Structure formats: structure tokens, C-alpha cells
Length: 176
Image (cartoon, rainbow, N blue to C red; front, side, top):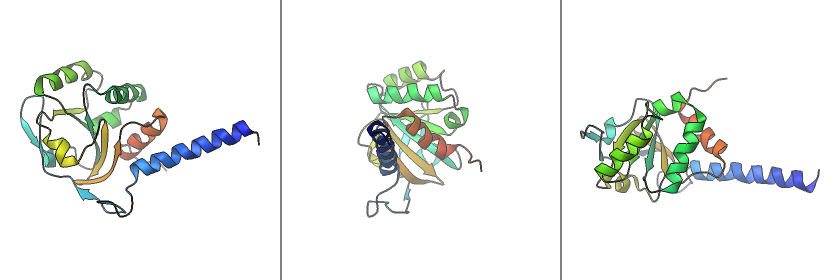
């Protein structure tokens, strides 16, 4: 095996390990191991201005909570990657919470809403969702099921295919 092939295989192995380390909870961490942690209580604002409680923000079953900031280049890259995936199933199982004042969040939805009409958009103008979810940066993606946070991913992965696999794998039906 040539040195170049070994290098490519090693890089692929490291990328898979990085995805697993980012997505799978660490043993001993808060909510670590196989334990899930409850989705904490918080309110966000729907585009209509109506307050939505965290317990009502997502669809039934497995869904993604994607926390973004309009000024975050990584948040913009995430949306560019999601647009390229052309996955209506992913969009319909995603709630995007925009950490910004109401006017800035509305502008962000106006810019991106037509690209993702099935996404449920919400604003977090006072940062209460960010604090309750312990979000440290944007974008921040959480896999939620039955009111429990099963996993989280901070930032975006360098390989858009790995990120797509993580996100789609959570919300799209598994085929044998």
C-alpha cells in the first residue's frame, strides 16, 4: 500500500472518530453514557411573535434543534451545506432557533425561509434558550427525541458529507 493511500485511510479514520467524538456523549459527562437529558424549559418566539415553549417547539418523534446566529460564518456554511443536500425529510424535522434580536431574526428568516419552507423558524431574542441549552457557540445542533436531548454537535464538521450523514441519519427513516 502506498504512503498516499495509507494517509487517505488514516484521514478517513480520524474523520470518523471526530464525528463519533462530537456526536456521541462522553461517559461520565452530564447526561453522558447512554443517558439522555431532558429538553430544558425555555420560550422562543415564532415568526408570528407568539411565544412557544420548548416542550411544544418540535414535531413528535426524532427531530433536530439547530441553534444559529446570523453573524456566524459557520451558521451560514451550515445552511449552504443543507441546501445542497436537498432533503425535504431533514427540513421537515428541523427547528431552527435564531439567537438574535427579533428584527435581525426576522431578516434572517426572510433571507433563508424560501430555501427551507418546511423548517420551523423561531427566535431567541433574550438568549434564554441558549442559556437553558448550554450552547457555547453557533451553529449548535441537538438531536431530540421524546423530549430528551440524545446528542449534540457544536460547530460544523470539515466534511459536509459527514455532517449530512449525522443530521439525515437522525431524522430520516432507516432502510434495511
